[in-house]
Length: 138
Image (cartoon, rainbow, N blue to C red; front, side, top):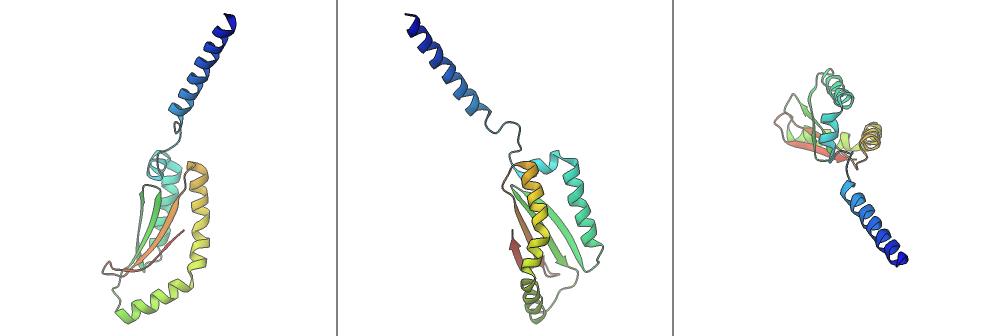
C-alpha cells in the first residue's frame, strides 16, 4: 500500500515539475530583440550613439530600426546618384563586405549575449531617392 502511495506521489511530483518547467520556459527573457532594446536603456542609448556618429560624417542620413530579432542600419545618401554612379558605389561597398561585417559583428554578439536571442544585423545602403543600392546581413 505504501509503495502505491509513493508511486502516486512521485508521479504527481514529476507531473508538477514537468508542468512548471514547460510553463516557465521563456519566462524572464525577452520575446524578441525589439523588446530587449526597449527594456534596456543602455542598449538603446548605445544604438542612438551609433546613429549620431554615423550622421556626423554628413554624406548620409542614418536610420536604425529594430523589428523582431533584426537590427537594421539604413544608410541613405543625401544625394541621388545616377545609375552608373550607383553601380560603382555598389561595387565598392561589396568590396568592403567583409570589413563591414567585421565592424558590426561585435554589436551582434553583444546583443545576442545580453538577450539570449539569435540576432540578425542588416546593413542597407540607399540612394538619395530611397532605392536600395546594396544590403548585407550578418
